[in-house]
Image (cartoon, rainbow, N blue to C red):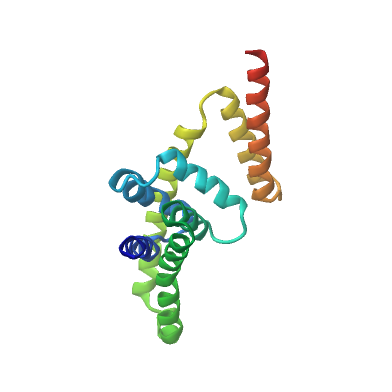
Length: 180
């Protein structure tokens, strides 16, 4: 029970300070889950993010469920999911109660501008980390550039792009194993 509470509180804290989606959560996960607690390796966290992107729903929730499940099976998954979404529920409830004054408050507008800058920095950190772990040779660079171009210049769903990139990577690996 103590570990379930620890899982809930850890993801509650992450849910309370993570703005901008699941990618802004990655540096916090690396520090808390990989470095501080050693619950998972960095590769496992990146793998959970990759799978979490392909599933419906919020990446942060998906990843928290995977990590919670890895630690304590179904009870851990539930504790992590509740932990990561509870702060948002509380904040949204408070905003709804105070909405009339909230949306026009200059302090709130400035706070969101500052938060958006921090979110950009956190997402850039996540991209750099994922690049270092995932792009190991020129083939990875080509796949990454191709997927980026398709994401920017077409209306293809990110789910299909992730699947295509995975299939391309698997195909290249199988070809290399066949030659070696």
